[in-house]
Length: 526
Image 1 (cartoon, rainbow, N blue to C red):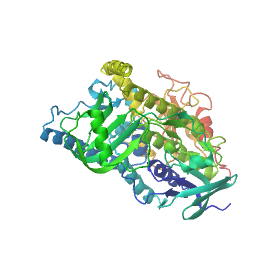
Image 2: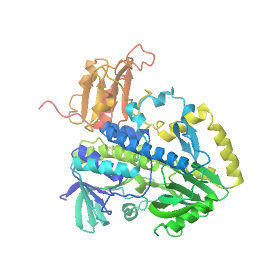
Image 3: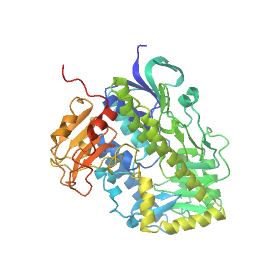
Image 4: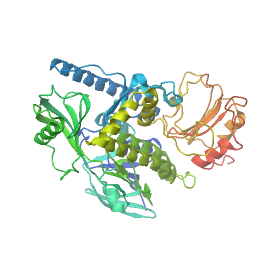
């Protein structure tokens, strides 16, 4: 089959755009199909976690994210000022924010910042308050810079997948492609038409999130609040609130969310009958439907983001889970398209990402159980809140929420293997993240090891070799970093406390890792 594009991505939200950018960075022709004609302005996720911030940092996007965060912090300050002016009973700047679990706020001043898991992210650790709409706009601009073809106002209507490719049928005709990736959300057309199983737990709540113009808010509590009728959150910007009612899923998810519906829900949950919603700027409904496909791939059709897994938004994990999917899949699919992928590389996408997705589903289920407006959940919530007031528990929850705990099960016993590569400060004044912008792998020689450098021969265009030093970690001899930022191999200098058996670790360590993730070296004899 002759292809119109090597990859077609269904869905032009943050996940689809991130995947398309990764493919384009690897010189893979890609077309993105998006049914919406403009960037989705519906209020959704309000922040990104550390792995997502690291991913954008490694692609040179951190300054833009920092500016988005600056604006978002300004909105939060405006929210506090507005409440002060309205005469709210309690108006104060909260302690340093470290996240929340089931609405139980974590105090940043209780965070054990000496924990080594918090040391590795470098400048990416300082950026997190990035709303989804802003991120989508940033990624749309990045995709345009990379030459990605994004077809807006185009709906995928069907496809025929075979051994040699996929014929994708759209509202504007048919595309021939080698691979189809569904990034088309929780009600994914690609998932449904491909026949992916989607097991999980049924919804039991109706959540509403909105940005509105409203009055009579003086008696509303700021932040998260629990009542006998449900849970609500007010802030962190003027006019933003969220309600959760535990009386089953909405009767019609597709019906427009009206001012009357939002006002009635907020009054029911909060008990504040003076609240009036005058205008809806953006609003959405959600449930705690929690499902996940067992395998993210069916032949030449793959899924990423909400198309592969759905859950409630509590804890802000969904957007980040999808960005992680895109980073993991992008370089592996590109390697497959270019023909140098080692056997089974594409199957490691499910193997690595499915366990993290399953954890997120349970993480959100636990929060829903804790938020229920009944006495047993209330008793448990008070105990968890008391625990959250300790350094140990705050650090535990913050590590989970931030994503710094994540690790893939890769061969090798070095503590860095399988983890996000630390953003090392190097002798030449650069940082490790500066050397990952081109989307290639990186073999870092930190001990002037000729044998290690020899291993890199034949991997040009796939793996960059950098010989330098690292005063910050003098005992570290070398690292092999995959394009997604994951440490594929690491070793220490002989004689150090963490010595793994020499500069190259176990026999054939770096060479084996290169073959496992980057295939056979090119023949240099000709």
